[in-house]
Amino acid sequence: MHREDLPLDRQLRQEILFARERVYRFGKSTPLERLELPGPGPEVWIKREDLSPIKAYKWRGACNRMAILTPAEIKRGVVTASAGNHAQGVALAARTLGIKARIYMPRSTPKVKQAAVSHHGSEFVEIYLAGDSYDDAVAAARADETASGAVYIHAYDDLKVMAGQGTLADEVVLSGRGPFDAAYLQIGGGGMAAGVSTWLKTYWPDIKCIGVEGVGQASMKAALEVGNPVALEHVDLFCDGTAVRKAGNLPFEICKNTLSQIETVTNAEVSTAMRVLWEGLRCISEPSGAMGLAAVLKNRENLIGKRVLVVLCGANIDFLQLGLIAQSLGDGAKTSRTLRVRIPERAGAMLELLDSCFEGLNIADFQYGKTDTEFAWPAFTIHTKDATVLEALPEKLNRLDFAWEDLTDAVDIAFRAIPLRGDLLRNPAFFRLDFYERPGALHDFLDQRIRGNASLCYFNYRQSGERIGRALIGLDFPSQYERDALLMTIPSHGDGYRLCEVVDEATRRRLVGY
Image (cartoon, rainbow, N blue to C red; front, side, top):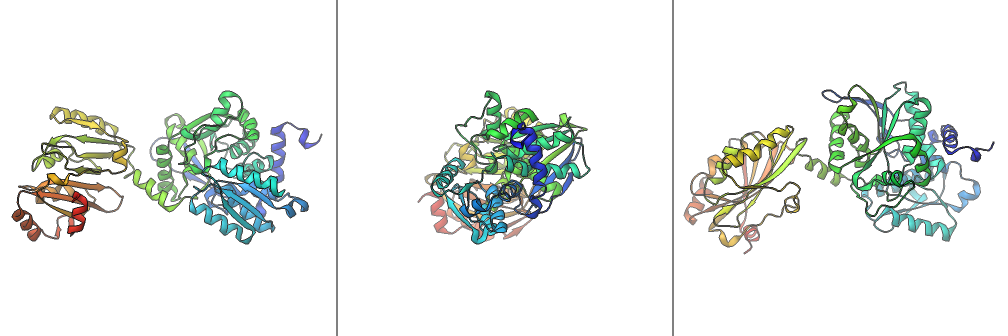
């Protein structure tokens, strides 16, 4: 019986065996490492594909597919479309094999992935940015294929590509760390999940293979629900490596039989998993690479005592995105809430609020600008690992007759749109303040320096994770004399703080709007 006459799953198993003979010409196997989670939970093992030649698993499938090109196909060259990691695999294979490749990528592809493609492919690769989505890049690459006769190397809907990805599961089996009770496998088009689940279940038939997708990009989940691949109307791009509108036909045919279920995870859950990987293994993951662990953490209680496999499938992330994700997580708190609280617009009212309701809490973000003569509405974002703390805060505010509203995830808070009416200010002064990120340091400054006639008219602070917190503060004084007196007498250094500078007149005018 010819291979092509075999059932698809048997064809894939055979191709994974053949892939063993090819992929290690291009790179070495990657380690399997234990991730220690604090407290009760599963025994988690991480397959470190971030340590591969291209910092992602995609080299396996691309290299396996390109290694079997015929001399005639090599002469025609290859073309592909990719959001980044598959492109790097094609580039690596192109340079190693001496094959010309044209790679189409969305214009939104992270710069780090574009640079990596150029690095791995050198003079053998040409990069074309086409459209804003993976689908746009595919359309451009397919048009090139038709016009030029080049061989199209699909990112996931190809048996040889799927087989190449399956070699990472072969390494897991050969590691001697198994068997595992469950494997959490992220899904974009489904090639990795198909290859890995097929191989794992060949050796450990009882293992549960769970597909993991982002809430806003669950194309395989949609396909399984209706019985065939369907295109999603919208795709969330936070996990850019798995942002695929439609699952592959071949991966779907495999995954519908090998996956026990599909788990979806939010961007916030993925971000938390990225932090856990950093704290546990000191490794940096791209968002898609942490999706599997995010699903494990989400189901942690149900997995206590189980042995679980997770694939860290890539680490190609722009540095700027890494910073934004880290900042959004604050100090690693599991829970956060933003509350806007009404207080009288008078000197000392802000400190009274902090003393009575927010004492001892981790204020990760503090935004306020004076917009009314009678009332102030400062907004505080609280991070905590104890959800009961946040549950108790509204009760405390109500008991002390503070009006409040929940602005968690509000757009104006996220974009730091802090209004300030300059016409309501009399004699303002603005300071840039640095203070130690320890309990009480900011409160002590406000307590020591603002009590009296000065009133707070502006506050802009966001926790950055550094030892030093930085804030821009505005004070308003009843008279020019009192303003000048404070400016002349306030120490540049104090207990827990350092007054970096008094904001110059030009900046002050921009802040107050005149």
